[in-house]
Length: 177
Image (cartoon, rainbow, N blue to C red):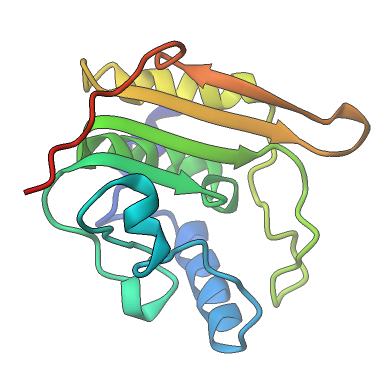
């Protein structure tokens, strides 16, 4: 990732990250993005948790970073929308919020949707090995946190690759007060 990637953070994202955030916000306003976040109803019961905290920097109701740490962090259909130069800090941030596990689902193929400027919505299209290296690097700073990333592709080269240290692991039930 190099020195340039190390300089980027939540407080100092790349110019590309800031521009993409503007484009995603524009798409939210126009109703062109579906959000993979469900703060109410079925999902807390499905996961067996008391509450779910949502974060989406491009969607105003959930744009403030969460405070504290959580038993689990789930990130689906997000990372492929982030610039490669910002991925190290973004994935490290996921691990920083997690006490027990991190789960991510990552598309390794171009998106069907286009950004308002015509670019493909998936700005980082890379093979599973790329993601494995990023996650291993972030996980090294958080021993004891289990993680799994599902890197998948569509089309003739389609498939689902499971990455991580959680293979065969079972998390004990979460106690709900």
